[in-house]
Image 1 (cartoon, rainbow, N blue to C red):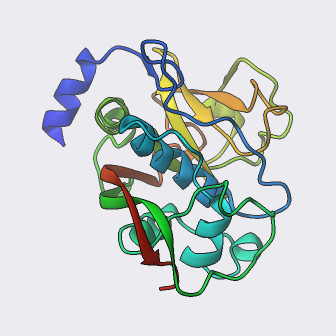
Image 2 (cartoon, rainbow, N blue to C red):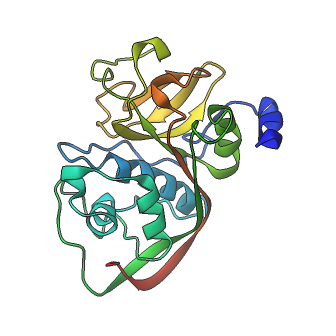
Length: 233
């Protein structure tokens, strides 16, 4: 961790929506009235790994909701559960299992899977010194990073930098950091492209704003597959 902290000062800003004219981030979607934000945040991370290998389709959030957790729309869930699921079971594409914004039944038998997670990790300001300071390193080496966030005051956000003084650290939502500038984190939300800055929020850096460093979950290794795997744990 100390090594990472020393390295991070040399990293330039990055935005995975445009790296040399190529986007590794799928379009912003809407979770509607379903509490599946954690699955949307996780899907953005998995889609980066697909795109990195030349496979850009959107991951099926519905499949992740139905198979990795129970009653996800009603009760929510964790990104760590999604990545653990994706390291053992099938992950379908959105075109194969579209989003319905409600809990459905996980498919029986084997289905066509497109990605497998080889390694994922969790960081937190509770157990890792300067967890927020390590996000630059993670974004450059492993792409978009999923996080838990305090979104209670986000409803009326329309633009600009959302300051740390405008929110607490009581985590109630999941989003994905896709890049940063010197002043803010670029965060993809799942409240549709009509919210915020075309679906994104710019969150102040360096102050653990909205609890940005309280629950960080990232994938350090994943690869595309094309094989039939069971989807039910």
